[in-house]
Amino acid sequence: MLAAIAAGVAVWLAIRAARSGADPRRLRWPLAVTAVVVAARIVVTALLSAGGWVLVDDRVTIGLPAAVVPLTVAAVAAVRGRAVTISGQVAAAGVLISAWLAWVPRDPSGAPAVAAVVAVALTLTAAAAALRRRGHGTGKRSPAVVGALLIVAAVGLLFLPGRPVDSADWGGGPRTTRVPYAADIAQLTGPRGRSADVRFTLTAARGTVRLASGRVVPALTFNGTSPGPTLRVRTGQVVEVVLVNTDVAEGVTIHWHGVDVPNAEDGVPGLTQDAVPPGGQHVYRFVPNRSGTFWYHSHRDSRDTVARGLFGALLVDAPEHDDGEFTLFTHAWPLGKDTVSALNDADAPTRRAVPDGRALRLRLINSSQDPQRIQVTGVQFQVAAIDGNAVHEPGVLPSGTVLLLAAGGRYDVALVMPATTVTVSLHSNEQAATAALVLSPTGLGEPAGDGHGPAFDPAAYGSPDATPPPAAADRRFDLRLDNGFKVSGAGLTFANTVNGRLAPAIPTLMVAVGDTVRMRVTNRGIIDHPMHLHGHRVRVLARNGRPVTGSPWWTDTLNVAPGEWYDITFRADNPGVWMDHCHNFKHAAEGMTWHLAYIGVTAPHDHSGEAAE
Ligand code: C2O
Ligand code: CU
View (cartoon, rainbow, N blue to C red):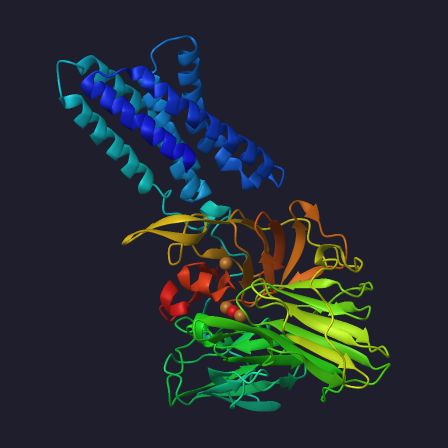
């Protein structure tokens, strides 16, 4: 921005000089300042590149040259004592364009077109400046010509998001299907013919949640509570859940987060079903195929309704009683203008008596919109599972280890209760830990944990098992998450984009049944993005180019932090049209939402971005 301001001053001086015949050498100062700022940008870009070429590629190939090349020409002219009237204006225009490119993310597939437009814009600027110099003293039309040309160039840059692409342009591969497949989403249901092995009714309604501190949150509940009832089921059972909506005006659906249910049972309003209105109901049926910690939540207006309480735990093959278990949601309760961080409804320390020597499992589930840091103090422990997937030979982590839990993600923590106090504390970014679970044989004790401790790293935890990841892929997708300004209807808004786009302009990723799919997700912005693909679990191959060294890392919700890039793979074995989105529901609602679709599957419902959000 500093460079753009300095360049703007240079342009203004140049135009004044052209109009009034003032001394064009005054251009040199703002150009010198611009050069210093641009040099600083080069240093920053070089530092960023240490994180990986994918973080800087277009900045190095287009963004910086647009500023650096004309600035260098002007600098050489200045040093040689020549006039910088023309070269100075071109340099200033280059810096402005470069700032624009840095602030407005775009589709990498459009890079050649952007480079061409930049070259044309700079050439036009040079031509206009030359015209103006010739016209000086005789004609007045040149400034108008210059202005018109610059506007043409700016408009060209504005409306050049790259061609409308389909996923093939994102490296998706051929639009052919290895297995001819044809189905409508409505046909892709769970077992309807057999009788259910286990049945639940979840009734959504307005209500309140009383937090441990005594504060009362106006909330939305399932069966009168939030978190809603914990559903315990077994693999292979036909599970039936009847969703009833009493009075939730937004409408309700249930998404079985992390369970790879058939497409029609996925609970995405506007895509796999219509949202259930007040007074309505909907029946879900599915057969869980993997043990572990999962959760359910409404998918209608989720930014608001999940925060207010429409969620609960779904445990597959967990013990019937939770003597040795604690299921803890890290949640941010909306209270007036604030949010209150809590473990379930506990925004203050809570204490429980646990006998010395008992094996415990803590099921940690992040139902908030941000990554949460959870610290376990007072005992060594293991992370037994990530997103419901057992870790192979999990190692022992020291007391005080901090677990970063993606929004929507889960960790199962295993420990053996010592004779002393164990603290599970939640450290949110904005506030000191006030939410904590204190376990001790006596049920007394003060919370420990200051949020400082070694960080748990799932990429190097446990040991490899006998299943190496697939070496080849049938399709590859490259997703770049940026932030910057986005041109939308009214003007410029700050946005989190996927390849420079927002829903519904993000192309659907097309796959065929049986494909091995590889995806690279790069976060080039400054905010965490927890990536959640419905209907599939994915295996993480590498982070920032470095392969995963420990246990196979299976996940359904992967936090991609600023500056990180992940290579992931999954098998396309669950036909349908699936949402793929950021589990920061605010980002999702603002457009960080797209779909993965199987060739041959048709959607009866409209799935424009807004409806599916
Ligand atoms: Cu848990 Cu589409 O979300
Ligand atoms: Cu996000």
